[in-house]
Length: 156
Length: 292
Image 1 (cartoon, each protein chain N blue to C red):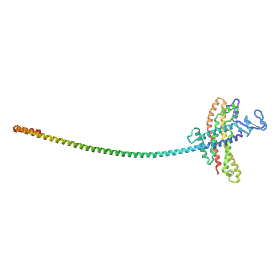
Image 2 (tube, each protein chain N blue to C red; image 1 turned 60 degrees about the vertical axis):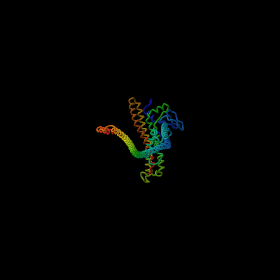
Image 3 (cartoon, chains in turn orange, yellow; image 1 turned 90 degrees about the horizontal axis):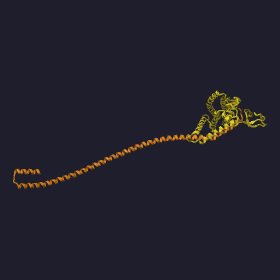
């Protein structure tokens, strides 16, 4: 165990290494670590903010959905109303048309009846003429008359 | 294991001898019989006795090379981390280095309340450098000396912290910083602290001065010698265990178990000693900054 110049050699080396560490090692590493700590803190804050924003957005979305539902219900209502209106209108039109057709039919029928009556009238007069001819031509016979008259009546 | 024709005590002494380069005094008779000319001569020491004869004018080459080499390794490693450190996601060695730095930073902030940009890098340097020097203790004691022996290097102590010069060199460095900051921060208060404590009366100034100076000097000595003592004792036990391998097959088995056990235990010791050196440095500098 000798004390010698090694002592000073080590002291000088010690000083140099400490100076090197103090100048070129410690500050950059500490700076990087601090910067990272700040970055992480910022990141956490941003995450918090994002969570808050998300909540707001969700609330807004729910509101919009509600509005849209209300609007859709209004539209459906209006459509139903309009549909009913159309149906009513169609019914009315149909009714009017039916009346018109019925009236036309009735008029035609009446015309037919009148025509038939005219015809009948014509035939009756012709028949009456024929009957009178026969009466005048043949002997008057009560039973024969009766029979004739009956026949006449049946023909009417 | 002891080399051929070497007794156990020779083996141990060989392992505890540093590789020294220094100035032998004039007229010194070397082991091979040659005599150093007048005026002395700078040369490699061929034995422990020659190293002793060199006195103060010698350098332990092995201690210096390993110590500076490990210091450079520390600087290279952490400089690389500093260059690669970004605020992004750290990975691999950057992560590891940042873990150490964060630990050192926390320890410094817990203990040292002043503002001094020197203390934290100083603490980091001490922690990692001392730990690396201590780590050399876990390399089996014979490997590197044996390899170097093949290249003609006769002595090699690869654990710098088992050299009292190394540990005291660092402790004295810390001591100089303590004195510097005591005077810078407290000024005259530092003189008062040395002379008027613990007995606050002019009559007791010599007594106070003596007690305070002893207390002050005890700090660097306890700092340096604690590390040296622990590492030296640990190294000695490794050497003794290694010597046991030469005592026969049966003993080799025991030695193997002992070596594994002691090495595992020593992982704790080297880390603890590096940590203690760092914490005490911070505490001493903190005391130097505090005005009473």
